[in-house]
Image 1 (cartoon, rainbow, N blue to C red):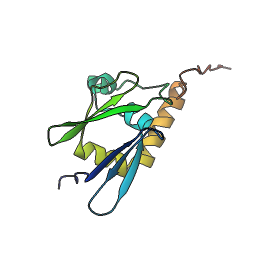
Image 2 (cartoon, rainbow, N blue to C red):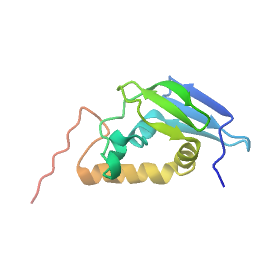
Image 3 (cartoon, rainbow, N blue to C red):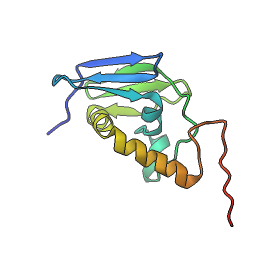
Image 4 (cartoon, rainbow, N blue to C red):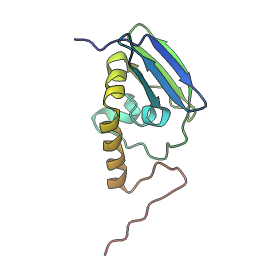
Length: 126
């Protein structure tokens, strides 16, 4: 069964979130940072070898454009605009937000990386 198509799409620039509303009354707020680090673009997915996106805590969405009848093209203020977010992928990002976000945070921690672009983690090996 295909994922539902949002009936309401609203960019909240002040809170840096994308709101998706569905016919069943559910509404989801997706932070720009979350959308950016989980972009479906080849730049992020790395052609099968994902590239960890660090330092994106301050990223903002500056544009939302339709991509045919099947997706949205999101434009971020760091220049990233190559990912097409299908309705199915957006719905999975919305409904699996807690798990996907925690997996991302765990991956950052494992890599010794930070969400903050001004912070470099240093590991001391005993």
